Every structure is written in structure tokens, then in C-alpha cells.
Image (tube, rainbow, N blue to C red; front, top):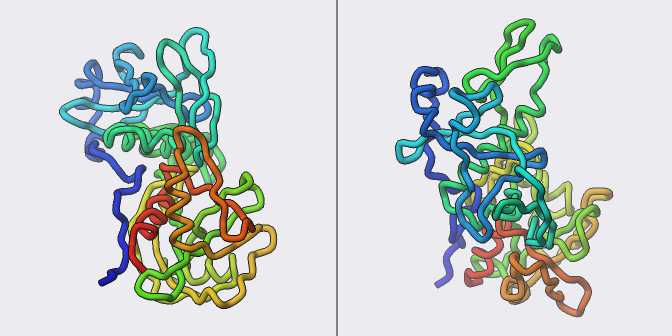
Length: 338
């Protein structure tokens, strides 16, 4: 007997082992005492971090290499197995060449390589990291984006400075404090009405995406809006479909620049016409479970994306990358019974 599908795996960027230790952000004596034994995650100007070639763990640096105490731009990430972890800006040391490897959505990209390390981004490499590294990289990336967008006070316009070891900013003029913000966004797998889990899934593509790239629908939650109401509104606005039976699946941080993706599923009538939103959705279509399963069988994010033909050759799909909750949602649906 079929049962409603659930996420079979924890989304890649939801994995973490590190204790954020919020109380230590206002305890400088404790953080300074353990700085000599701490480890540092480096992020370059594009948000890449080093890993040893083929490794599943970040290539941490020794904190003492950056001085006897945390530099002003150091951000405390948390504690794991009695070791403190921080992030700092930094790039490859010495001359770097480039190597080709899978990036976002499995498309091959060139990344820097120096000293036996490759500098990878979170979208393309996050799924290969162990839980500790994935959690640290995600948090460091989120705080990096926040800091780049919070350099000036929203009240008086004066410059801000980091306080609480990277977890707050304080205005140098009026003293107002700001904290990292997260923008909630819903992402919904809409399936058809047959059986418990439907026989088809609704996929769409944006005009700016590479050819063949499709995903489930998503959108930001508006002020004063419930999550379920946002799901209904976004699907209607983007493809003209009315959905029912909205059900929560799970969540994943998505620090590009500061979202939390809240995963849902819902049902819609696939016999009704779809009306893609002009300028936002280039194409929307229903895809069968068999075709999605075939796409998973054909896809390999480590070798580059290979499009999967859709019935009649009308379209081809490239599935979302391994670091996206969209892929986890689609895999769970594809593995379920109608």
C-alpha cells in the first residue's frame, strides 16, 4: 500500500555536527584562551574554500598562523570535539593553476588549485563533504554574505563594525546593533492527483537557466504571510496552477545569499493548462515518474550534467545539483510508489 512520500535523506546543507555555542560570542576570555588550538575555514572573494584533492574534509588552517589572537574580521563558527572553529577571508598561497570539476547543477567548471588543494564552492562540492565540514562551510558562507551586505547602518547610514566575533554588527555612529538575517523561501514539489503520490511531477525552468535545466517551483515568503499560503500563491503566480493538500517535508539553509528553503509538496490537476509567468518562467511541464527515474540514472554530478529526453523529444531535463534540497525532494518522490 502506498504511503505519502517523505524526504529519504537529510538535505546536504542541513547536515552539521558543530555546536554554535552562542554564549561564547560574548565570552572573549574563553575564545582567546582556546585560539592557539583553534582551526580556521578560509573563504576567498568568490566564497570558495580549500580541500585536499578528492577529500571529504575542509583543509583547515591553524589559527595561530594568523596571529596570537583572532583578527578583527575573524568569525567564530562554533565548537566540535573540544576544538573551536573560525572563518577568515583568504585565498590560495603561491601560484595557482586550474582544474575542471563539477560545479552547480553538475556543469563542469574550472576551479583554482594550489599546493595539492582545490578551492571549491558550496553548491558544487557541498554534497561530498562530511557533516562537520558541510555545516561549517554553510555557516561561514552565510555570515560572509551577510557581512558584505551589512557594512552600513540602516538607521543613520554610518559604517558598522563586527561585534560578538562576527555574529552582530554595531553602528559606529548611533550604536545600533544588527544581527544576521535569514529570508524564508518555500520550495514545493507539485505532483498530479493520481493515487497517493501522483504519477507526474511539475517542473519548470527560468529564462536565465542553461538549456535543459529544470527544477520544482520556489519563491520568497512575503511579509505577514503563512508558509502554506505562500505555497498556494507562488504556484498560482508562476504557472497558473491551483494546488491543494499542502504538506511540509523539510528544510535546508541556502546561503546564496541568505535563504532558508522550506520544502513542501502539494497536488494539482495536470489536465488543466499551465500558464507560465511572463519573464519568470520560460516553460513548465509535467514529467512522469519513469522519466524522472531515468534522469537520476543518467545524471552524475561528478562527470557533468547529461540531459534526459522527455516524452516525444519535446524537452530535455537536467536535474538540480546534489547540494540542493530540490534534488532530495525529487529523489524521494521518484522512489515512492504512486
